[in-house]
Each structure stands twice: as structure tokens, then as C-alpha cells.
Length: 397
Image 1 (tube, rainbow, N blue to C red):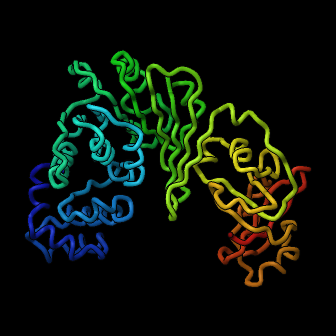
Image 2 (image 1 turned 180 degrees about the vertical axis):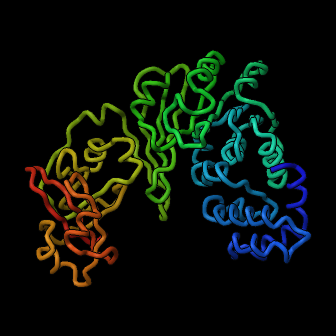
Image 3 (image 1 turned 180 degrees about the horizontal axis):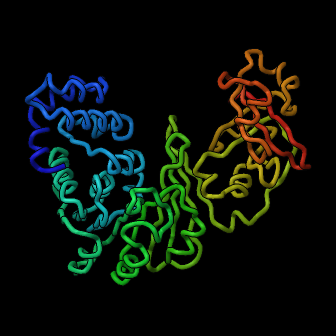
């Protein structure tokens, strides 16, 4: 977003129009552009579209009428308010440098824990936009540099306490990429430079990245944070500490409606085998962060629950474990995936179906049984410890 466009969109007329038409369809506004000859309706419509996304993703920024939002990849890839605030709780110091500034959400919250902050971004338009927004937010301890991470590091001789990197995960064809070597900037070139400066490094990566492969590629990782929002895995954080050697600690967090829930484990915890059991009174499904982090055995041992089968990743107990980090159900019946067998438990013909270590997909199960989606009954199609296939009919606790 150019400075001239920022100057137009920040005018009282444009801001009033955006707030007045916030609930309207941006496409419809563009089609009616002739009705508003004095306003850049196409750009205003883009603002309305991005502001709608920000209402849930960035509520504090959404509440500020003066804030302007980008559209496209910058808005899509930026952190949510919850995840950005979480990062800020992990670090503190004198100076933080964000080598991949983007829309500036992460640096805004990180900078509140540092005396000085540096924002590095190759896009001139993003630099102008973030600088303007920071002014609206009263964030005045940030210095701005319109350059690449590589050129900034080549010129800067004052190491920061922390370097934050959120590599661009798009290739030259604008297609999504996930592997470390495919992202920009190339971490394999950047990290050795930062390690020479004895600085800590915090890297945000796609939740699609394989954690084990990432740990093989990244040196001195002290912590891996797997961050989810409402049970959807949003990002992986790798905290690099130059003096660290050995295994990385796995820290999982899920920002649920009732608040954040965290579970921490070491790689050694996962090596200890859990107990196994037939389905008992309660059924447990770990949240998305634990599943992504691979804490399958660790969570069983930590909460005293038994696995149904080695690869099912569902757990059971006789007594209720109220603080289990995931969804909890009471088992009402055990049967098989069969229309007649399931019908007595589904008076409305509806159920929320999940397939865990089962030879059929949810779609295939629905086609076979005719069960419609919805209702308050949950059916887990899974494999038990003796290899039998089962359907567990449950109610949510």
C-alpha cells in the first residue's frame, strides 16, 4: 500500500465510509463504484474485506478505526493476536530484530518486551503501511529498514538479543511451500550468521512442516512450540539458543474458548510405552497441538489414561480426567460401523463422525451408513488393541 493511498484511506471521509459499510459485500460495493466518484471504492472494498478477517483474527487492531490492513498473502500469513501475544511471553531483552517484518503483528507484541526493536521488510509498501499503523498504536520504539534480511545483516554490526524470522512460504509461482529450504529468506544461509552473533532466534514455520525433519535441519533448537487456535494447528515455533545442545523440548498450546491449555514433554517421555485397554467409561482425543507434536505416549502417561491401540491415538479411563488437554467423551455404546447396528443410538439419524486408525474415511462411512452430519452424538470409528474394528458411540462431557 503506497503512502499516497494511505493518505487517502486515512481521511475522515474514507474511514467513515468503511465503518458505515463494514457489513456489506465488498464485491457489491465495487460494482456500485460509480455512485461514489470521489472515493477509491476498489481499495476501500479491499479494506472492508481485510477488516472483516481481522475482526476475529486481530480484535485489538480491528477495534482501532485508524488501522489499515493489507490484503492477500500479507493478511493471510500474518499471525493472529493470540499467537502473536504468545510469542511475546517467550522472550525479552534489550533489542529485537524482525528480519521478515510483513504486516508487523508479531513485532508489535514482541517489542513490548524489549527496549528497542528493528523492523526489516523488502516491500516498500508494507514498510509504509506498518509505520503508519504503529503510529496509530503509539508504538514508537521501532526503527524501520526497507531492505532484505541478507542486506540488513551484511550492513548491521550491532547484534540483537533476539532475531525473529517468519519466512515467506510462497515460491516464484505464488504457490505454497513448506520445506525449510524452499522458504525466503533461506534459513540455511541466515542462521549461521546469527549464531556467530550469539543471539537467540525465534522462527515461525508452517504447521504443515514435519517437525522431525525441521529439527534435523535446524541447529541448537531448545524448544519447539506447536500452537493451535480452537483446535486448529496454526504455526510451529522453533526457539534456537546458541549454547543449547541435545534434544528440544516440545511445548504444545491450544487457545480454546475456555482459555489456553498447555502440555509440555521431552522426546524421552515419548519413548516410554503407555498402558493399553479396551474402551472403558470415558474416551479422550488429544488436541491438535499434541497430535502434531507427536506426544501420543507422553500424554497417556502424564494423565493416567490408556491407549485403545498403538496407532489409534484415542485414550480411555474408568474415572474422569477433567483437565485432559483435548476433547473428552462418555462412551455410551460399543458397536460396529453398520447402519442397523448404529440406528438405535441415532434417533435423528445424525452424528458427528471421526475415523481414527480405521480403513474407511468419514465420507465413506457416511455413504455406507446414511448417517447425516450434526447432532449431539459422536461416533468414533477406530481399531481396538486386539485389532478389532469398532464404532464407539459417545456423548461430549
